[in-house]
Length: 292
Image 1 (cartoon, rainbow, N blue to C red):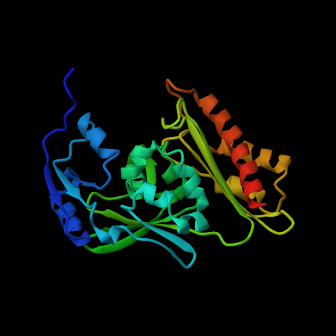
Image 2 (spheres, one colour):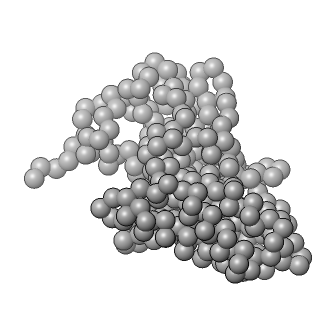
């Protein structure tokens, strides 16, 4: 068998974010942005993607912001996943993202892969989009006409299909930061091997008051459906309750009922629903203990 090889393409290294947007406007759907390349390059090698023009945004300082501003953690689109893993600000303000990153590929892919690249690639099993949806992060997009914002829960439509237009570039992701002494989080997934795509993943973040009553809860399920699934309805079940066995079981059952899982050669729809219930229960227990 011959070596896999991408179809021919032109390449431009963008000098600025505005330059990148100009190139996207000029070439339209024939252009693709590249930074880490951990998703796009393999797809090009297998000729599942055939962009006629690659626009390299890897060196643009405008896309490398990493900062806690007011009640948000702002992460630029081309910030490396490994940079986020090692960042003290992230560890303090958004530990759920660090817990999710442990499940993302392998060390080698996280050394090159970017936060924004994972979001825009929109693999339904990907961990970073799931956290963004569960917490309803704000995505900042830019084209030649200026910037716009959209919520993560409105961004993902289907596998590798999102609300971003061909002429737009993702600039940054703004994750809400929960304040309080008793905030806990957890992330779990089931895959055939560690580093493989998740059959089902689940995340939870909860806020408890001094007596252990839940004041806020965010839940999400990934891998089971064509897009990451935020579950605010299941989270609302927990508000005002102590996170005992009965409350957690009620929320886990609701989570399993709210999703519409797919079946394939790796797992049936029924098995994915079962995993969603089990993993939701598991992450809620772990988040509760983390908050305590």
